[in-house]
Image 1 (cartoon, rainbow, N blue to C red):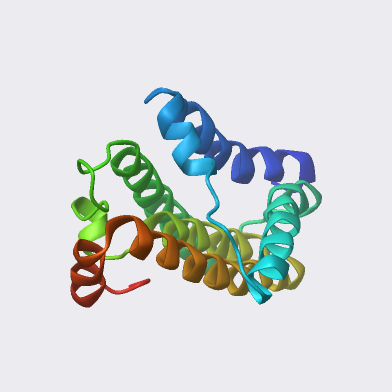
Image 2: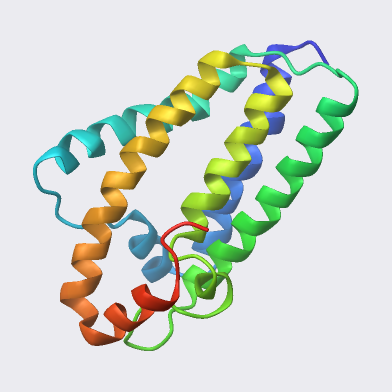
Length: 177
């Protein structure tokens, strides 16, 4: 598969369909929750801008990359991609169904406080493996650093929203994995 446009379609379209089409199946509230960014402070404001730019780059750059079969590395990359994609679907579905008035704590959210971010990262890490792209990997690394700062702002917001139940949740469940 040497065609670059085909690579972009294969790698990017599925993640967009899950993020927007699947999430929209759960209604406008689910879409609003997914699009919500809590207030940012200090360096988080810069991280937000970097996050927007790197998110766009992650969705555009694969259209300019080649996906070629390179033996076991390719097979490993495909397995990793599929696993990350399945975890992303599950985390989106679970996110769309909140746990009452408290923080989401069941399903994948009982293992990671941020399974959507984690699976999104793993998905694009697999894309890096499949395309052998250091450019895509660099963008992904910058994206992940920005996400960390946004997660800090989300945690501050959750603490203000949910109080002690969120503190208890933070003590039991790791931020990432």
